[in-house]
Amino acid sequence: MIIMRTKGITLPVNSVIIIALAVMVLLILAVFFVKGTGNINKTELENAWTACCSTIQTVYHCNTNESAFKLSDINPGYDINSNGTAENCEQICKMKFGLIADHKKCVCACPGCCT
Image (cartoon, rainbow, N blue to C red; front, side):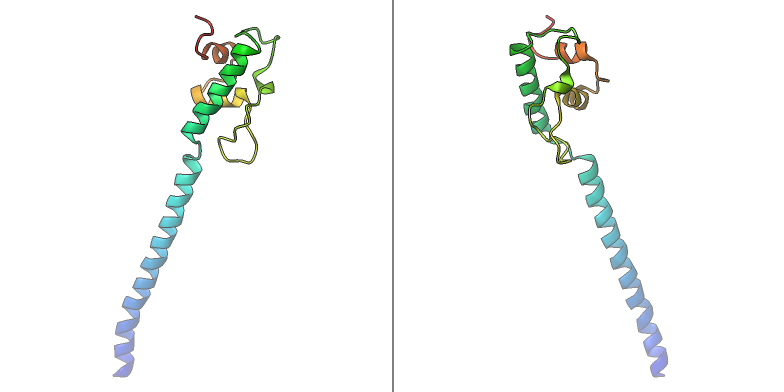
C-alpha cells in the first residue's frame, strides 16, 4: 500500500520538475534572443553617425569621391554592437541605413552634404 502512494506522488513531482526545467530553458532562450538581436544601441548608433558626419563635413568637406578618403578609415570610437571593437564609419553607415558600403550614399546621408 505504501508503494502505491509513493507512485502516485512521484508522477506529479516528476511533472513539476520537467515543467520547471522547461520554463528555465525558455527563459534562457528568451534572454539569448533579446540580447542577441537587440544588441545595437540606437542612441549610440545616432551619436556615432553624428560623429562620422561631423568628420566627413569638417575634414573631408562632404567629398563623395571615394579616392579622397575611405569611410573605413574614420573611427569615431563607438562600440555599437558590443563586440569589444569600435566600429568605423563604413560599418556604422551599414548599421544605420542598411547600405552596402556605398561611399557616395553614406556621405550624402549626412545633413548638408549633397544638397
